[in-house]
Length: 295
Length: 295
Image 1 (cartoon, rainbow over the protein chains, first blue to last red):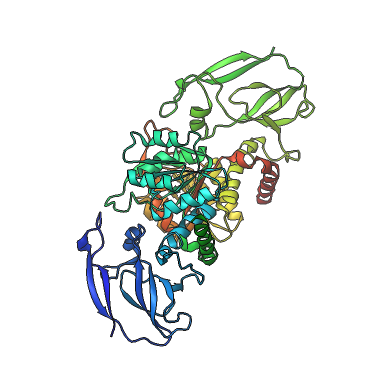
Image 2 (image 1 turned 135 degrees about the vertical axis):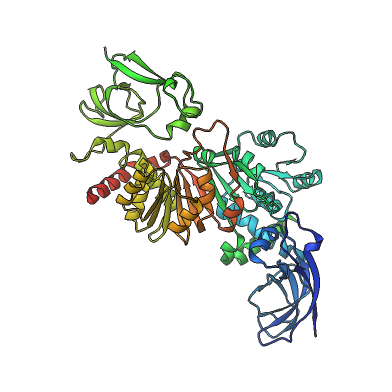
């Protein structure tokens, strides 16, 4: 009889998540039926999206949502033989019985020298999010200037690096000097600490006096109001996240964007990574190649 | 010597425009040079866009911007022979000397039974705005549900009628019971007076319980915040105007739209009609045909 340790959402978050919102529960897993596999978690991920998704996709008492890299420990499913690694939407738990519908195998030719943890990062959902935001939503072109906020995060850092590979100029904002140093290491053309600049508007202007063609939005709120004013005509905004808004108990407000959007003919589009799932395998292969070429 | 009566913007509007912001001035026009024509205004237009454009495209002392239908009274330019009608960006003035760069001839086969005033309305800039907002920005499809606000206006009323021709369901909002009656005459499926409904949210829900695929935005502000919540997944918002915001002396604020845009994967795009100028002639012909088929 296999036991699984699980982190359960005891009650919905109010404001900033607290330790007491979670509860560790041990559950006994049933015997495998035909077609099922037993998974053991190798890496878990914690991503910003979990905060807003917990509100709309979870009920109190559910195991906390999330993706993991897991190893198949027992298998009654030939698609997932024992010992292979998968990425699955299993949530925060050590062991899972899966019928295979919510897991996919890690790329067959995953290189030995690349940690499987990247399957939850640059070569996983966050990387795909960055890629699709730039290619599908922004349709970014060589020579354009990209603004990324929360730029040191799993998505932002990859978005900036992909844009550099595509021949763009990249400006990143982050909330710490160590993060800013990291962005410069990654090859961002400009980076600043939004918490310590005297004026966000000035910081954005200084980083790109001629404005921005594309804006990879991870933050929302006040940052977005200031950044929209710095867009060039026909600028595109990929709305990927709104981390400044996730913990609101009452909605933050800011100036309406309509007039700026009209005069500059801006496009702003919200997206979820699952929209281009049919491209995932090819996309992951491209990004793995980029990663290997860079190292 | 020809005299032109002109309405001059004496000073920039602050808040709601006042009579005293304008001044009637009579100016003497120079003799025609080679390539020039003398125009006499037949119809002038007053459009909402003039309010925000006056701020960014005019200086105090300029003749008020605007389009007019004019007749060519004298011509030194074979493209515009005497007696022909043109549409020109001449502003609010009775007579204009033009070198031809800012005027276009009214459609050659303009029917005798259609007033030339329509060249400033449904078969002119407002009509083109409606058409491009639906076709180019929203890419609206038969069977979809469209929301239009300021729906009794020159743009909104045409947007609703075109969407009906395309086999869509159309919901319109306007600020008067007479306007609502007019929308119903025009064939809108649902129309309501936003000033008298007890709840805008309820009115939008009642008019289309399953939500909206497309939203032709002429208003902005509070209306937009409520309407965005009623969009279906993959909804498209064509941001054409923000009439609720034009007279602001301090910017109105509302809840940030990012989270809704992400979860519903909404696209919001601001546009100006001039973007598709290369399609104007063909588009005006299509709309003239629609108008004649309907009458």
